[in-house]
Image 1: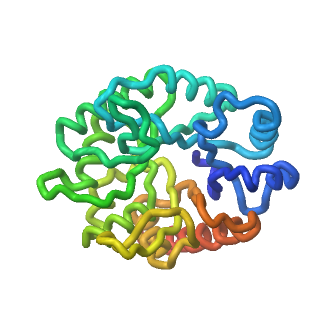
Image 2 (image 1 turned 180 degrees about the horizontal axis):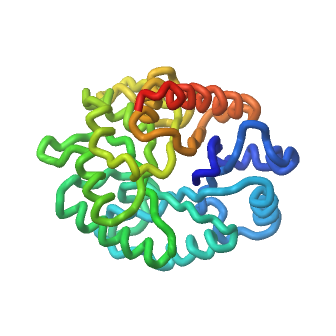
Image 3 (image 1 turned 90 degrees about the vertical axis):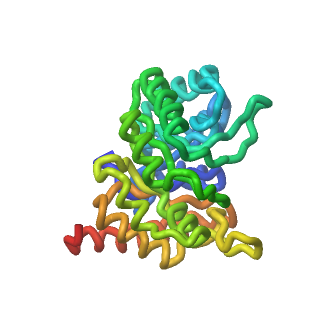
Amino acid sequence: MSLLRRGLGLRREHAKQLCQRGNMPGVDFLEVVPDNWMGLGGQSAETLQTLAGHYPMVAHGLSLSIGDAQDIDWGYLRRVREFLDAYRIDVYSDHLSASRDDQGYMYELVPVPRSAASARHIADKVRRVQEYLGRRLSLENVSSYYRDPHEMAEGEFIAMILQMSGCALLLDINNVYVNSINFNEDPNAFLQCIPEDAVSYYHIAGHAESAGCMPLLDTHGSDVCEEVVDLGKSVVARFGMRPLVLERDNNVPPLPALCDELQRIYASLLQQEGSGSR
């Protein structure tokens, strides 16, 4: 990861242009979702193979469901390992959440109860996943829309899992911001709980205002606002510069516009690191 800087989440609407352009200026790597590509053949497999020849890749999963009460889905994890091996991907991440119950997959990222018992359960599953994959897992902090006042603080909970499992944190800057606004929390208190050497890379994305009881919704459907970029500067001040992935899943703009946004954000965060404020 030390050789990677600016990354985009791979979208199918951009895949053809990325293949034709080769190395897109301002894009150093791509983040691919295995769930969207595993087991596909034909043109999809050819497209991904071409992209893998142009760009280093990291993998960001959706269905590990590390926080659920079930055993690991070994069939799913076997397919993930085959995918990672086939494309020589070393960095694999998924969400610190649950995405299934005893009835099957829900295709949602459900926050998990934040308790010491839950942390131990998750850490045990993480250790087994890492041993099976032969790779260090990165877990992403997620946005949530409910807080139980009796639960551990989010940062404290995540730090416990990191310490017990040896995994890394994929730090989603927008999710930290959304949770801080929705629950009137200090985002820096969250950041201070996380060990400095635990962060593997960053996500940044846009969100939307809500007319409901929660002011903000994590949508990945708009440009990144200045408040999130400013929080990103605080993140860099604490952890230093890490590879940065810009996510955009809805209202996806043309590829050049997305690349320009990525470059602007990265340059702003890099300037923060250069200020020597750590």
